[in-house]
Structures are given as C-alpha cells and as structure tokens.
Image (cartoon, rainbow, N blue to C red; front, side):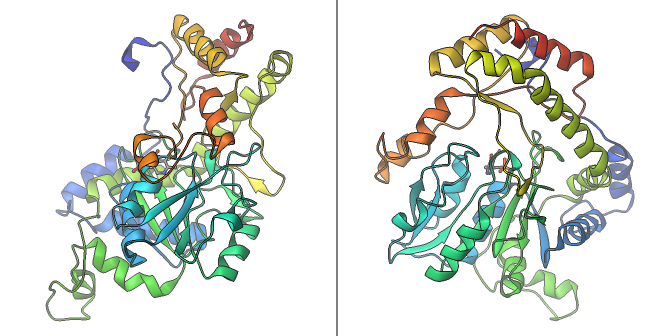
Amino acid sequence: MTEARYDIPFNRPSLSGDELKYLAEAVRMGHISGDGFYTSKCHDFLERKLGVRRALLTTSCTHALELAALLLDLNKGDEIILPAFSFVSTANAFVLRGARPVFADVRPDTLNLDEEKLPHLITRNTRAVVPMHYAGVGCEMDTILEIARNQNLAVIEDNAHGLFGKYRDRFLGTFGCLAAQSFHETKNVTCGEGGALLINDERFIERAEIIRQKGTDRTRFFRGKVDKYSWVDLGSSYLPSDILAAFLFAQFEAHVQIQASREQIWQRYYGELKDWADGNGVRLPVVPAECDQAYHLFYLLLPSLKQRQRFILRLKERGILSVFHYVPLHTSKMGRRYGGMPGDCPVAETISERLVRLPFYNQLSETEQSRVIDAIREIRV
Ligand SMILES: Cc1ncc(COP(=O)(O)O)c(C=O)c1O
C-alpha cells in the first residue's frame, strides 16, 4: 500500500520558509552545480552552530559515511564495531572498503550501542567504533570515547538522527573525529536527499575535500592554492547540487521553529500516551538526564511482534501509517555472511520486532495528532 492512501502519513515533507525563493536565486546566480553560494552558507551554518572544524555537504548520509571510511584508509581484515540496531549504511560504508563489521548489541533503554559490550568486541584488528545516536538521543559518549582513546580507535558518529541533539551540553556530531548527518526527507531538516560530513579532527580536512571532489585538488585550486587541479587521490563525487543546498539552507534558517514544533509534538505524544502505555505494557522512549534529544522520532515498544503487527494494522484501518524500524544487521543476509547469528544481540533482536514509529513530521497538525492519539488509546494491546 502506498502512503498516499493514508489520511495521516508517517512523514510529510514541508516548506518552512524561503526554500523556493533560494532555489530560484541559485539558478539566477548561474551556479547550480556543487560548492556554490548556498553550499558555503550551509557549511558556515553547521560549523558555527555546532562548533565543528569543517562541515562538507554530501549527497547523503550514506555518502558521508563512505567518505569517512575512505579517510580511515581501511585494509582488508580491519574491523569496525557498530550497533546491530542501525541502518544498513552504518555497516555498508565500511564493508565497501573491505572492513569486517562487528555487531554490538544495544542498550535496552536508549536502544543505542551498549558501551558495556564494547570492550569484549575489541580485537587487535579493530580500527573504529561507529556509535549511532538512535532517535537523536546521545550514546554514552564519555565511556565510548574513553575506551576508544585507550585502544587507539577512531570514533565515527552516525548522527543521521541527531542534528541539534546534545550529550552533556555538547552537540552530537562533535565527539568523533568524524560524524555523518542526513538530510533525507524524513529528517528534521531536509533537502530530499542529502547529508554532511562533520570533521572535528583537522588532520582529515584537506583529504576529505579531495575525496569529495573526485579525488582532485579542485577545492585548493578554487582557493588559489594551486594553479591547476588534477587527480591526486582516491575519490568520488559526493557533493550535492547548489539547488539542494539552497533548499537546505532555508530549512537551516528555520531550525529553531522546526525544533520547537517537533518538541511540542513529541511531548504531546509522551504526555497523552503515558497512562495508556502503562496500562497496556507498552514502553515509551527513554531519554537520560545527560541528553537533550533532537526530537527526531517517536516510538513505542509493544510487548511482542504479534501485538506490534496488530497495532500497525489497527492504525492502518483508521487511515494512519505507523512503521517499524531496522531489521537487525547481524541476522540479515549480509550480516550472517560476516558471522552474525540469532542470539548474538538479543536486545536488538527483540526491539526490532516490537518497535513502532508514529507519524512525526514538522507540520503534523494538532487535529492530525489528536486523531493518532485517540486511535491509539482505543487499542487494547
Ligand atoms: C542511522 C542511519 N544512518 C544512515 C542513514 C542513511 O541516510 P541517507 O538516507 O541520508 O543516506 C540512515 C537513514 O535514515 C539512518 O537511519
């Protein structure tokens, strides 16, 4: 069934201000390929707002992760530790470079990589850890960073969900040497398909610019640092059109209002579903005190797969689309090729079967949300 048949979809993209004006402006300025006026406005915004050394827009978060993996210079046999409950790109980006993914189970409260499992997964081949901040709620970064420092491992944050979220008052995306953002249609700020690589360790900056520009020193050429540009390293084309950057910049400008409206939606779901959840054995999201979440998504954990499927069906009958999330990576066809077995990551396995995400988008109206809440409260799990 397509989303169009639902009265209340799971996600609905919206304009938040000047998107179309800036898009036309990019065309008028005569530069709609990558690294134009709006791309540099976006870079500037991310660098200032988050306090990262360098931000580079990419065509997706997947590509930002691939760029990060290229920067690590991985060799066959190198191992990367990542949460079993994550999107395929968290693994694929490194697998593409010949590395072996090692799957960590997640914490039952935040559903983030379980830092206590980390020491047991480290071998002499481990090169990096990729924490992913699920739902924009920060991982236990103090512990993860300490373990990584002691073992000389790189930390790459998959911050697809976490833009504007904080851990101990510091923005997510500023902890790892590198971090990847997503501006996919379902994210808080979007340009349809897009992403960014955040660089906190300045040793990576020059090479990241080269890899993103097809392995050439074109960025240095445009800065007047070299008199011609040529092929100098591995690379690909990871830079988005300035048309997408123009759209994205308008969303960045509206980020305060976007975040405020998402916070309000999240708090209303939480407040108005709490009693129903308690009475039905359903668990609501957990946000530790040290985390300011990014208000990226709202999920429920039903008691079992069967009850989750029934719940999705009941909402569907009311014209409301609710969706499950990741299938565990370690038990997927590819995960099993890397040695993953059912039972390896029991928390990831159970939450994957029980989790359901509710409609959540910037312009979800009060009336729409009331319909979702009323429909849920009628369900006896
Ligand atoms: C945790 C995580 N990482 C990476 C991605 C990939 O993002 P993109 O679609 O921008 O490539 C997603 C997709 O939603 C995701 O959930």
